[in-house]
Length: 329
Image (cartoon, rainbow, N blue to C red; front, side):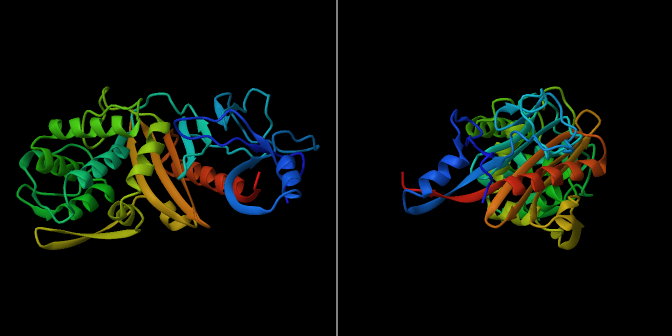
């Protein structure tokens, strides 16, 4: 049972934040007076801890738990997640925001752009649609799946080439085959972003190549991840440690760049990214005991630290997000 000095933090969604909180003490009192008819997911934290010799995490003034800034001394959280990423957010699949850092500040997002490319492709086409790689797509700058001009593949295979080895060539090939040009496909990406509610996002290309007009926010990418993870094929691709793709009749096996799939219990996605402008990025997801959490970290300090950061957020979320039984009030 939770201790009486713990408070039950208010539920809030990615778009709407509730203003009221219910104390655990109040819940316990009501349980004594009524039958329990169901359960609800809640978020519980020790807001005030007066115990001596408690080690506090290295937190920043812009770190936010459930709408409360914890770095200004007004809220004490002994085990707050300590990460190095500059922009970050942690959210449940049911839209409860658990933790934020600069979550609405605009930033480049590198190859995590490809999450939107995949989502739009799956909505605009079918996995078995045949596609051909053009000269322009094959010669796209940056990370590559080694596609050649004239290569043929189904959309599902190009999605693997794009999401697993992070092929910019596959991104452009998908865009051109679906919309005729990458520019036309980008228009579809921006329309989808608006429909999801990604108000701080704009796309200028399908791969994440650095451009001043290709930017997002950590909170927007929580919304995007939830939408993308609703697609079964997307989940299958980003949740696999190794994935095979067939290009021009030849099968190639790619190994995921997402180390959490091997290193963290329940990890099931989704995408890494890096450019000099965006820094080291990771959008990660994990599921345990029926809960799925999404963590976004942008501009972390090293290739490995982005995994450390996301794992810290996800583990912290699982430690504080749980089911409690609520009475019939």
